[in-house]
Image 1 (cartoon, rainbow over the protein chains, first blue to last red):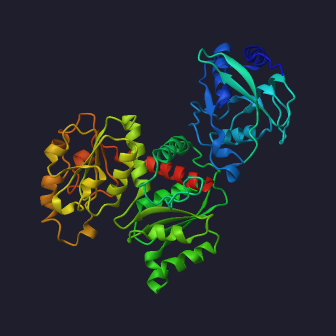
Image 2: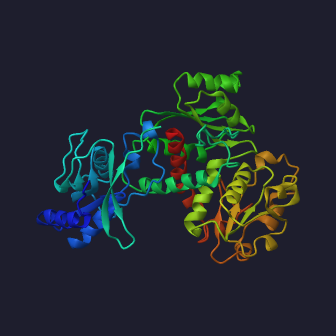
Length: 168
Length: 316
């Protein structure tokens, strides 16, 4: 299956976000792909406020089933959340559960003025009432496929499609 | 299959009873996870919802303020429900056995037991006895082990020294009675510290301690030379029974950590102490409150490390 060029999608996404950017806008990337995207968007949009990064492992709803993710990274929100307009950045929007977890985590830092969502790809399959405000591309995928954003050594982003490893 | 009672059939941590025999990967996973919890404990809202609805029982058969409090705070920051039982003052004094106490609490749907006991092996006994969905953390058993203390020491060392390779670490004081020292030695060795020294008078050393792979010194001037990390131990007066030392003044003269003695170690060395400190016995106030002391950060990191241990156990 032909996948779109991630770099082109990133450029498109930046232009969709740009009209809404104010001096009170902050970007928060969700590990791992969302943080790569947020770093690039921060640069393209010339934002001055620092960038945030979230690892939502402590807020996931599947902890009771699968336990803690093996590689938890520290979340880093180096600004006051109170009153800020936050744009949450993720690579692939799917069930919406990650976004639910990220939203809950942000509220434990303070009460933002608003949270919007930007995703490089929306692959459908939502299990929660969540929608993105900015989307690079919409791709319909079967349930047994996994779409992943990857970063090469020179920082170039690309999309890859994998077969999900069946449980057990 | 493995014979380590701490691991489940997948080789994951089921109970935390001792640092002995745990692979470096498990120790490092605890330290890495704790790094993420440090950020949580620095926020305005210091809670995450991971253990919501879980019941954690602190079973303290021996008095403790700091360890019990940090376990309690750790559990509460994970949103668990915590029940503190000061058993020294309750059922056991009425004659109930340890396992009867545990059975009763299991019937109240406990998910985790944090156990402090004056008898070595008490936490192991409980771990062997409980249903497989219950996790046990050893918060100190007799002279045997105190794994979360050792882990928070490892976390503190890594924070200040970046990694464990090329380090010279000295454990100073009452090794004989110290469960902390035993857990520290196993953790340091597993994590690849090339030189672990212990410095103590002969009367405060267990027999054949060299077998643990440590270098033994009886003299502070020799033992502290070029050391990167000093792990001070509390002089365990309550376990001493009078026979090991002439007097605490004599001990301070030879083994108490003063600025003069600390100057023998590396200039950028750090000083740790598990608390509570006996100022003027094993450590001088000028050192305890000095700029090489990381004793208070240890307490802060101790909460993050215990949150990590509880989370990893509950998830396995």
